[in-house]
Amino acid sequence: MSTGGNGEARQSIARKTASGHLKGWGSPRHAKAANTGSLFLMPENEEAYLLWQYCRSQLRMSFSGPVGIDFNAVFSVAEVLGLDMSPALLTKLRILENVMIEEVEKIHERQKHQRQD
Image (cartoon, rainbow, N blue to C red; front, side):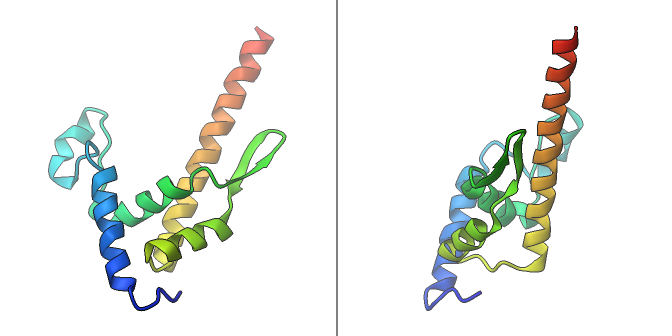
């Protein structure tokens, strides 16, 4: 994906923005926090997390809730941020999408069981 003449500058801004979004998320240095149930984010996942934060409202919806993310929007936002949409980044976003869908399904199941009680 072409990022234009300012691609490196945009990537730098995106990384700085990601760093700002990640305050409180810790890092692998803080692996001890993971043992206590806290989340941490490895540096190689920062771009995926940043892109997810920008695009998590771009969902494809059905009557039962979200069925996936609108990847057309994701590609557009990635381009604006100067991020290369690599196969690795796409795979990470698909993992986040799958986790989101699984969590929504769990919520639906809990609600279904509550209605039956």
